[in-house]
Length: 155
Image 1: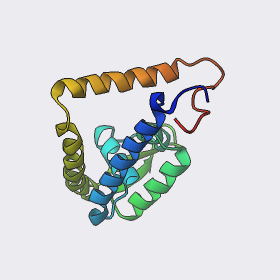
Image 2: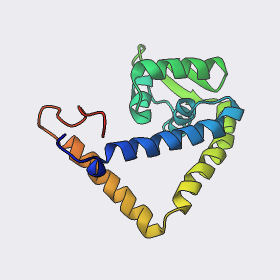
Image 3: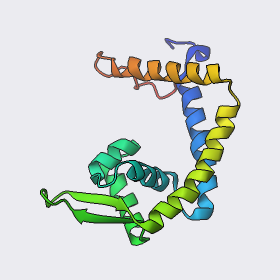
Image 4: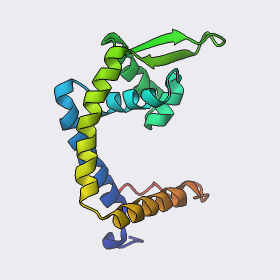
């Protein structure tokens, strides 16, 4: 064991992420939305016409997972997908009016979860946490040791 348990951050970060996703999932369930579906609707609101692949990157999921999410959203009439005018193999995705209305309701619920978390911290702590998490992400992105980071699933 090269790093003592008390110095491992991975489990703490993962636990926080899981609790956050569970809380958002519970808040969105009455609207018959998953967190992934909400994330897609939210991203589409800011980037209408985005492709499925770009949407997958924005939502931090695989293209295959996004394909399933978009299929469900399209079947529910929440998004439309049309061929790009110049690249016929690329589908542009946009919110429908119904999708935008549902997103508004879902976002109110998601914001309540975010506020509960945010309100537990002072403004200075929130800024510090964002900075620290950004530095953690940067350190892992800068890792050039052949993938050693991330091999230890324990933290």
